[in-house]
Image (cartoon, rainbow, N blue to C red; front, top):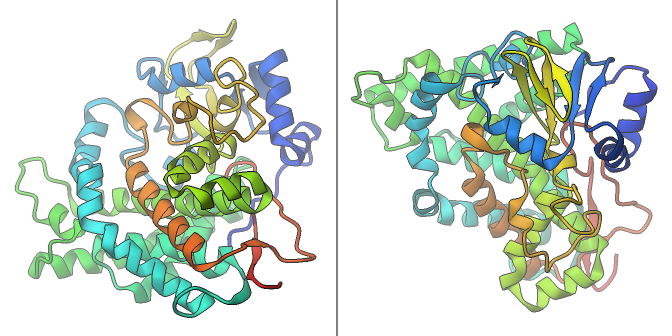
Length: 402
C-alpha cells in the first residue's frame, strides 16, 4: 500500500501534517498566500484565489521542470496548456463524458464491485464479518475498473498497484528526494513497456477499447504511441488514487457519523449528497500545483515568474466565505457541488464522472451487503496524508457482532 514520503523536519510542515484543516484555517485568515520555505513554494488557501489561479492560463502554467507531475510522467494533458493541452485531452474527453462512461462501464463496474464484495462477505447479504476495506476493496476496484476501460487484463492488477503506490509517493515528494524520483522513473518505464505491448496488440487486432480508439484514430494530428503512453499514465493514476480515496472517505464518514449513516440508509437517493459533501469536507487530493509565468499579485502578494504555487484544494473547500460552518459535515449543504475537489478550469479532472460512477456503485452495494457497518473494536478511525488524504487503513465490521 502507499506510504507517504517522509517530509522535512520543519515545524511548519509538522503542523501541516498533524492537523491540516487547522493549519489551513489559520493561513486563510492570517496569510492566504504563504511562503513554505521548506518546500520552496507558495500555498494559496482561499477559495476565490485558488479558483482564479486554476482558471488563469495566462499567468499560471502546469508543465515545467519544477512540476512533480512533469518530473514523474513527462509531457501529458496535465502538464501542457492551451492548444497543446486541448489536442491531448480532446482525444479522451468523449470517452469520459457522462453518457459514454455510463454506457461503457456501468455494468462492468457493478460486476467488478460485486465480485470483490463476494470475496469479503460471501454472496448476497452478509450475516456478519470484518475486513480491512482499503486493501481488500477500495484499492482494488479502481485498478480493475481502469484496466477494463482500457481493455487490459485484470491479471495486471498487482503490478499496476505496485507502480501506482510508487507514483503516489513521487507526486507527494515535495522534498524532491532522489530515491523516490529514481524509483518512479523505473516504475514509469515498466508501465510504458506494458502499455506499448497492448498498443501493438490492438494495432493488429482492434477491440473497441479506449487504447484501440486512440491507436486507430484517423485524425491528421493523431497521438503518437509515446503520447498515448504518457497520457494513459496520468489517466490511470488519477483513476486509481482518487477513486480509492473517495470510497474510503465516504465509508469513513458513514461509520463515523451515525446520523449521516442512518439518513443515507433510509433514503438511498441521498448517496450523491453524501459523495459531494465528502469530496468537499475531505478532499482526496489536497493541492493542484501551478507555476508562475510572469510576475503577478495574488491577495496582495507578488509572485515572481518561475515561482511554484500549490493551490490548496482542501483548504479552499473549507473556506467559510463560500461554505457556512465548513468544518461540519452537512448532508443538507445546498452548495456542496461548488467544491474544487476535481480542480477547476481547463485542467478540471477528465475522469470525474467515472470516479463518481465507481464510488456510487460501490457505496450502494456496500449498504446492501453490509448491514450495521461500523469500526472494528480497537481499530481507531484515522485520516492521514498531506497531499493524498484518506484512511491509511479502514477496519470495518458488519452484522450481528464484531
